Amino acid sequence: MSAKKKNKPVEPQSQAKLPDFSLPGQLESGNRLFWMLAAFLLLALIVFFRKFIFDSQAIMLGSDMITQGLQTRKIGIEAILEGKGYPLWNPLSFCGLPYAGGLTGPLYFPLTLLYFIMPLFRAIGWTFLLMMLAGGMFCYLWIRELGLSKVAAALCAVMFTFTGWVASG
Image (cartoon, rainbow, N blue to C red; front, side):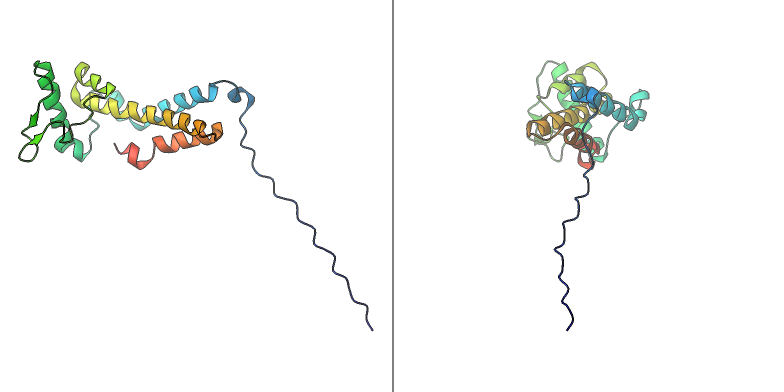
């Protein structure tokens, strides 16, 4: 008779080491990562919108903005500058629409003030750029509020800022 071999119990293999996502000590303290992220996003947006930023005649408009957004905003800004307040009716959209209900743009948004201090076609572009920066930074703060790490929050902020939905304006 042959002796039966006893199978030894299989020992668990050592777990593969997970990558270390901790930040360098300089970035871990205080709000340094927040400000570094803000600087990175600003630099990335300057590169992304360089043609618009460095050419004072460049316009940042997609097809929707050219066909309706610019004209609709112009009606409102001109009415305010003439002392009439926001118009009640927009005769240029379709067969006419109530102004406040017809895709007028950011009526009561703080960055609308840019429309009064620079040419409208430039102010719209700067509004897009500043909103992308603010959106990324608020995304970072929100992710941190949810309890995720600073690295995760920074990654989410960059992804949100440059996602197609946001970056296409």
